[in-house]
Length: 210
Image (tube, rainbow, N blue to C red; front, side):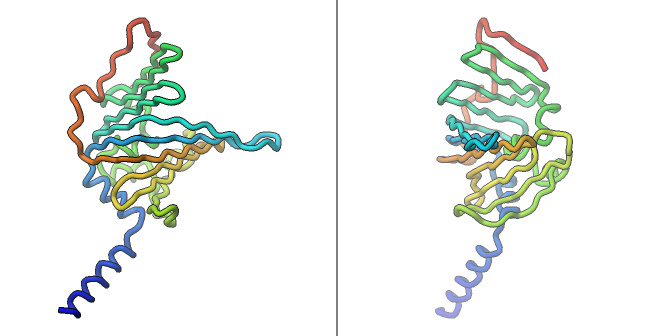
């Protein structure tokens, strides 16, 4: 019995050691068809003329349902809503009372949203991104995703997992701006309310199409 337990412990330890970012991403893509979490986003712009880099922090809630549905609600410091309903990507700025809408299939190909919710499986992700495991850091397993299209504003994304639970996105754009999104309280496959991914422009809002 003792030898059997020892064998099982060694096997489990080996499985844990072999786990990497890509296997975590694959497990997430297979098991998480929907999710809900809180997030904190810190955007850091590259320093200019020898000045110290400046950061801005915002927070809110995040929901997704694959394929093609997600919602970011920014609550602090400014109210903003981003909704993908499967056909249209909506962005609402409460301060400006302005709505921008874009065709979703043209807006989300090589974006972090594709990693979160748009792509139905790992094969679909590989069509738009080169994926490779990155070194573990901050207690997370990481995947480096590099867009295959070189003409976009996105340079790379590191996706961090705690096991098969999405924990972070580290986004670098072509201007050197870094956006770090950390997710907390992630619930996988929750029963999301009807209308979660439905957006209706508020009365009186200016609606722009792109």
